[in-house]
Length: 238
Image 1 (cartoon, rainbow, N blue to C red):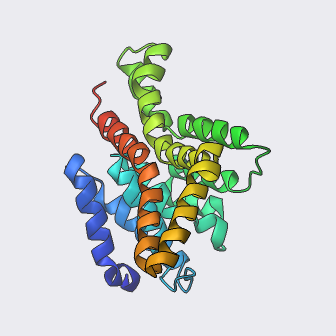
Image 2 (image 1 turned 180 degrees about the vertical axis):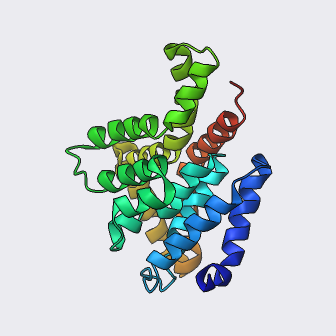
């Protein structure tokens, strides 16, 4: 309990974000998942020196921003427990149930995959996004009388797209920056002009920051469009 009390501000921040879109949030589940993860990762730190628990908490915050349900958020909090601690997947299943254990197990297996190409990795993003939708959503759609095609179109795909948009956007921006248009033409020109101006005006820092800002702005429209899609899908009505 001491671990939970020490990080109560993190738990409260996550719960407040979830409660904004789900007033009847399962507070007990998320608090229990956070405590379990914090205790399992006790003593582990990131390269920055920050406690490791901030990483799964950050992942859960991102998914809360996509308005996902509590089992998915709990799995985000627990996603490195099996991979980076001595905890076994069966222990996790006994503590949190089969649905959350399967989500954690899927993430653990995915980190061990070695992709043969960028296309292979991209396809795996889409497949993982579709398979990450809890089975309970399929069952609920069936109970409501939706056909399999309707379930995929109205329930599965919107959630899957919301999940994969961040990784797909990052891949697309990286691909754009690696393209001949940007990496050969634009960056060469930027670097050349920067060198000429900096040697003329002796303002290496200011001009360097300006070049960095221009390079950053190249990917900004794509990131903005990605955020627009995430927001639009978050409020899409079934």
